[in-house]
Image (cartoon, rainbow, N blue to C red; front, side, top):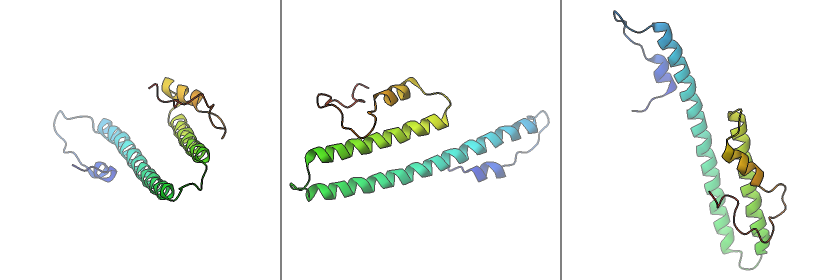
Length: 132
């Protein structure tokens, strides 16, 4: 059953003898409406982000075919690392703003994400998230 915030707002309950306190039910439904609206907004934002990432993957795949020798592989690797770093930093920022306190995993990722655009050390072949 699909349920929207408007469905919750419009729902009416019949009164009954020995029923629930109507004010308590209304307060709870207000909280439910707020959370459903927030989740719907977040879901929409994630769908837009997924579409953008899918377009980026398609663009990169097209470019990989024409890359026969034009681009330096280290430049491509640096670009990919940079994009992944920016994406992870954005996710950490979103988590920071949505919750007052970081989880242990978020703290670990924040510490392990290399700062700046400098590539990771040559002997650091394993990605920082591989130990998960």
